[in-house]
Length: 296
Image 1 (tube, one colour):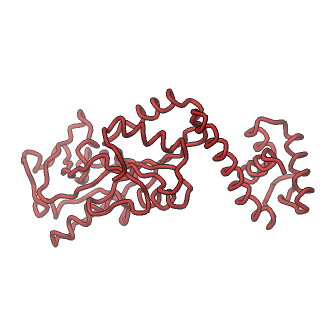
Image 2 (image 1 turned 90 degrees about the vertical axis):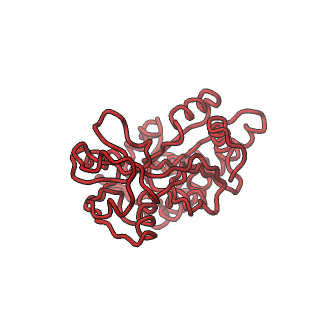
Image 3 (image 1 turned 180 degrees about the vertical axis):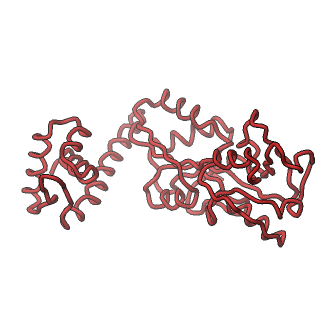
């Protein structure tokens, strides 16, 4: 069984189409189809149920594909480790990023990493901190930038603190409290809020702060992005509590400090079990920027 055959099988499984899989693998369809048939003969099973209109995994195929992915990842990891021993960092680097990163110019960090290690293939996706922590522990993600309440740390990972921030009240252009220098949670408890979805790490620190103060609030708008939060505040439909660096200048928004308001810690987290050379190179690049030495 060849690694290339497994790559072809994974492509077909993900695309559910031989033509698209061949294009993705940069081979002609006849060559890909031939290699899939060779693989099926070698395994003694049929991996794909084919008709003129659709391609589906058989039970055998559904069992084979996860193992094939693991085998390819192991092969890629072995090559990367061998290259690192010879002084060359390569392989893949998968990064998770929360939508409200403020402590790090991630684009600049990745550009510097790419310039230093051009053979590292970088992928990045947005999501929430809890899922990223679980994926790092499971070996499905190399590293992530997280935002967590000040009393929570990313257990089960190596990590370093990037920043500790206290949220501010973000008010629209016409809000009557915009002239205040400081507010308490009681001052803004009866306001209408826009926030991230209930239960999400991006909202957790705010809910905790109100609960600790014995106060309730009304979140009328639940959205997925900081940009949408700012849009609704700009329209004077709601107020928000956000890290101050998230709020751009020039939109007519006012930020006011909040006594005993929510606090957030930004972390860089990565696997505490045999991280890849590419992941360690990324960590060192971040450390060189933030001036932090050693995991926290």
